[in-house]
Length: 81
Image 1 (cartoon, rainbow, N blue to C red):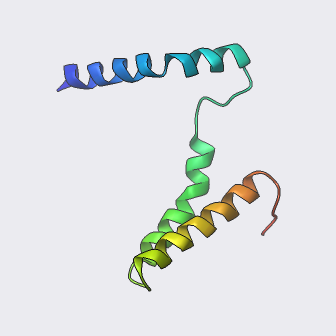
Image 2: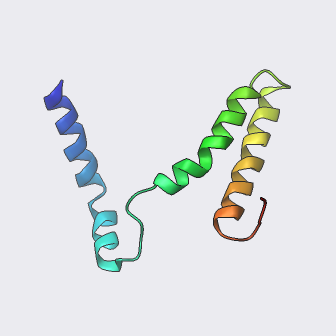
């Protein structure tokens, strides 16, 4: 099991080598995405709570709108307190 996970991690690194080199050359790009994951947590929770309301299309549309709102907040386009 551990060998399989290591193989998967190494293959992933090799497949993303070009992107990793660009990140190292640039120096301004964020390597982690914790901030983005934290921003999406309320969206995912709301989506989970609204699963049984309306249709599947409604759920997808709601997820898109909430994702758009969080992206705007992150980029200081929209300020909601």
